[in-house]
Image 1 (cartoon, rainbow, N blue to C red):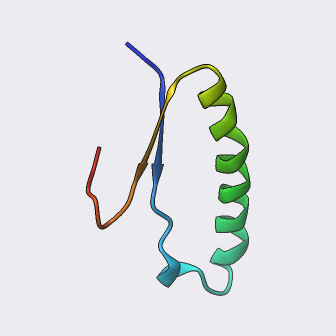
Image 2 (tube, helix red, strand yellow; image 1 turned 90 degrees about the vertical axis):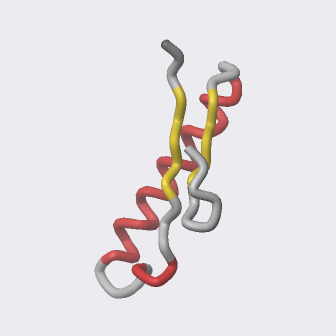
Length: 54
């Protein structure tokens, strides 16, 4: 079994009011972790509403 990071698309439609801070915090963590996964040659798989790729 391999470890992977799956990043689920953050929807712009929900980036309003109180959710902005939560989404900004999530983005900070995601952006910090991506290079760590890539450095260890672990899979980073973005998933968005248009691609439906898993």
